[in-house]
Amino acid sequence: MALYVQKYGGTSVGTVERIEAVAQKVKSFRDAGHQVVVVVSAMSGETNRLIGLAKSISDSPDPREMDVLVSTGEQVTIALLSMALQKIGVDARSFTGWQAGIHTDNVHMKARIEDINSDGMRAELDQGKVVIVAGFQGIDDDNNITTLGRGGSDTTGVALAAALKADECQIYTDVDGVYTTDPRVVPLARRMEKVTFEEMLEMASLGSKVLQIRSVEFAGKYKVPLRVLSSFQDGPGTLITTEENSSMENPVIAGIAFNRDEAKVTVKGVPDIPGVASRILVPVSDANIEVDMIIQNVSADGTTDFTFTVHRNDYSKALSILQRLASELGAASVSGTDDICKVSMVGVGMRSHAGVASKMFKTLADENINILAITTSEIKISVVIAEKYLELAVRALHKAFELDAEVAEEK
Ligand code: ASP
Ligand code: MG
Image: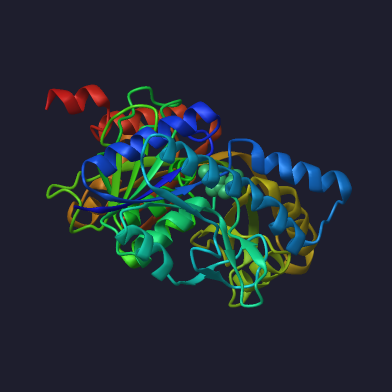
């Protein structure tokens, strides 16, 4: 007998028929002798509808009242699912966030869970009931309803699994797992059997479409095995777990993530003297612009070039800050471009395999793709390239590192 926490997202409970299908699925786990705690989202579109209602009254609604409002979506689905289970002979009981003992801090609309008093849920489980909990919500010390930020039901699921020491937290969604890269770019992308928490966090740009990234951090911290799977078709999905529990033979590369929202800014011919980097970057960070990669060239004749990348939304702001600074810095020129992108290869196997970077660079060179910047960490190598080469680069790398579905099946 195992204890599973199963989270069903908005599309999985989007209609009464789908809620009844979820009830059947939960029943099959009960029939097999397992204990089940179910976390549900609001019916798809409902949270947006509620936010729309609030916005039609005020541009900046009171955050406390927003939480009272948006938490209602999940209260509907817990009750309906409980009814659907009872109708097919499964004993079930619904819990709102506070009834489930989910205590949070008092930051409305992006609260963090502080602790969970699971006694009430345990008592019901011990009586053989299925426990159904409203995702996304909790209560603060002053009994105010709070919510955890968009997509927060995933985090509720993981937090409950940690508190109840569940065997697995299963996230049921409308895709059948996490893929080696975006299948819209590489049709041969493959569902990963297993991926480590660390890899998943590095691949946030791929994973965040499937899972709230905060829930992955949470699961990694408490070592809760997390499985992403489809609620519409059977299959093993993707297991997100610790490195030890991930497969014996880790593939060198788990997946390839990419990000189009990049821009870069270059200051040319600045004097190569102490303090220049901070004189360039402090005004940028003071403007709340987050800098990603930073490259300083080797200096020639006492001057150097300085390049950094920012989110595309911050591009014109960053450029104008530097244009203002240019004369003060004694820079020769300031330039930039926002038609670049970042491609990252991620894998814990890199730690024990040399040559990943050189193979990556060679693959890109063979396609005549120029690398504009490079950064590395222990389990990730990222390059900046022209955006027009994004698809070509990701496909070539996916193939070169034998991630393509066909190649994998031939082995
Ligand atoms: N219903 C909330 C949202 O749409 C929480 C969730 O679905 O996870 O963001
Ligand atoms: Mg969701």
